[in-house]
Picture 1 (cartoon, rainbow, N blue to C red):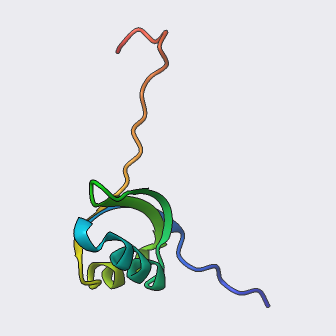
Picture 2 (picture 1 turned 180 degrees about the horizontal axis):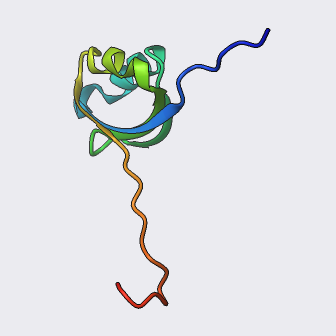
Picture 3 (picture 1 turned 180 degrees about the vertical axis):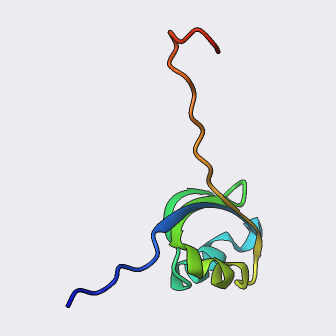
Length: 82
């Protein structure tokens, strides 16, 4: 018997309280976030998390907003329509 894999991780971008940045990031990691980038002076960070863990991230004190990353696809430079 094989185990079913968990939900695929999704990319998220978070705005958090910049005055408590390190503490909020640590709490987000405990809630399941894998941090991929930090911008402490802006109070933003990016990371990946299982879709079903997003409500846990939203519940962390100091989180101001969470947005899912959306891929943008551009046509090749030599395509007729730009």
